Image (cartoon, rainbow over all chains, first blue to last red; front, side, top):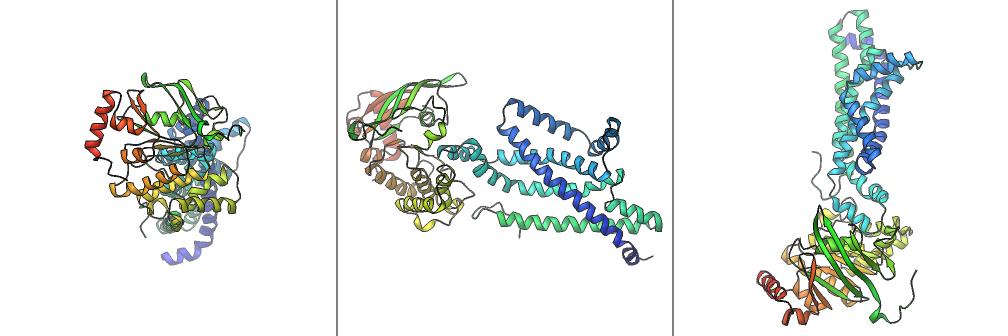
Length: 224
Length: 261
């Protein structure tokens, strides 16, 4: 079979997988982002207890492989009676994992904002929380976008790990198609091309967003 | 809250600093500072770097907490106030490095506090912001962002931002020392107008021309204490302390004799 024929005969399967991959990645990254905000703020501005909890969480998550976390959720939880579907287990594993990384990127972005910004906000009578919300975060999130793009791309590709527990995403579909027609090279090449196009497409979108949100007059601008 | 005795403004105390002490890591930066500011007065604090001048200003609006001593804004004790945000609204602070909100344009920089802190509606806030921006001569720059302004313009926006909150007292922490020499004049001009309009101002600055033009008193600080506090004529012509004379000689050598205004 030619590559074109492979594409023709398998694109429906791959498209099904594509939706799952997108759903998995987008859900995980978005939920992970909100957890990351809580973690980063706890680490930066929280009391000792909040700091310790966030720090512990981040260290545990970053210190263990994503695949191990996924296996624990999928294979170990049933032992205590919690049975998750492959997709649910994957989403949970991914957003837990991603939240730790995003929290650290966000913390870096917050730390890069000069302390004068907080002083100025407090000096006009804002509470600390108002200062964070209206002055610090709007600037920090702009600086966070490039590393967030990286994290998104990372997660998009690593979502392929969930085929191991049986979530029907792109890799799982490719494996299914290849095991029927034995055209392993061409089918996986097709999968690779899909991932590549997804990644390239999303990085363009994020580059656009980065430029749209750029503060006029500043140099922190992605290349046009 | 305390609208009483507004009538005799000449003796109306706005700020009372009583025996303030502050240490950082065991090093005592402020060793018992006391002074009073009446309504409408302008005082200028001078002194060598590392003397605690900035720390003192930060203590007054509690960006830094004092170790001991008391500070009062009119009758309210700042140093023990639970609602420090309320008190900070009444004290404008102008920073050496401007600290404009980088992600907001000029208009939003000035009206953010009005909308978020004073809970004004947008229209009312805009009117006040425009009025203050006109006062500092930047009404035609409202759409620009901080990164598009010169240092002098940034500092004037920062002054407008502080004024918009309608403070009882303005603190200036070396407002011109981060500026190119040719931009200093425009900021001092705004400050002189402000002093003449009756604002109560406490300024850390080494612009002696400014001090001579508008200061009611000059406070010379060194080593965490007030060495001398006197009207400019006395400080410049007949300082009581030898150390004041030495310091002023150094300053005039460095900056020239009162070339600004």
